[in-house]
Each structure stands twice: as C-alpha cells, then as structure tokens.
Image 1: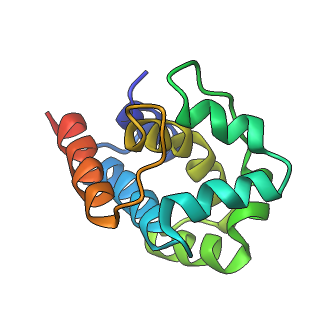
Image 2 (image 1 turned 180 degrees about the vertical axis):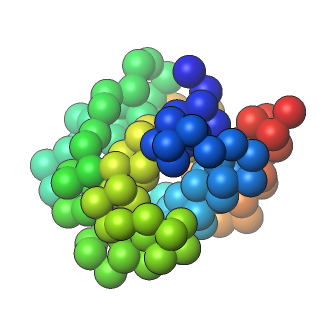
Amino acid sequence: MSLLDMAGQLLGGQQGGNNANVLSEVMSLVNNHPGGLPGLVQGFEQNGLGGVVNSWVSTGANQPVNGAQVQNVLGGEQIQNLASKLGVSPEMASTMAAQVLPQIVNHLTPNGQVPQSGSNLMELGEGLLKSFMK
C-alpha cells in the first residue's frame, strides 16, 4: 500500500490534494522539528522508541508506531498544529502521522543513515511527494 493510499484511508477515502497535504504537512513537521530529522530520531530514542525509529532509518523493515507514541515524541502542541492544518482532531492527526512517519523517515534516510543537511531533506521530501503524485 502506498503512502497516498494510507493517507486516503485515514482521511475516509478522500483523494487527490488531501493525500498530498497529509504527506506535505508531516514532512514539514519533520523538517521543522527542533533539530530536524536528527532531532526527531533523538526524540524517539529518548522516549524509549530507539529500536522503532532505527528500523525506519535502516534498510530493513519498518516497525510500526501508534498515535500515542507519536504524540509523546512530538508533543501536544505540534500535534494540535498538525490537526489544525489538516482539519482533523488531534487524535486523528497523531494516528495519521504514525501511519506515514515510518515511510517518510525511511525515504529520507535512503542509505540507512540520517542526513545532517536540511536542504537535502527538503529535496528528498519533494522527491517523495512527486513520486506519489504520479
């Protein structure tokens, strides 16, 4: 199942721009997270989810995460901001983020390593969005 399919299911079957909006907003959240992607990875590690986030970074299978775990790492304010941008409840926003974050982080770490360059992350993120818009 593609990221757009998952996002569409989470949005109740809505298609098109809404799917890209979910991906775009979660990628923006990753990019704007304190410390960027490295900071996000560190946040998961500090919350006892190092094995989970490292599975996303590595070249192996991605372990799942749930909405509550994502909210613990990101914090209520970031989840509320995401919910407002997506027009959904905070619970739905954290669930949506939990569904797409593993694939986004996996895509942003193609060589099994967290890149340190913010501009590189934006290029990788744009590539991810373009690949799902086809």
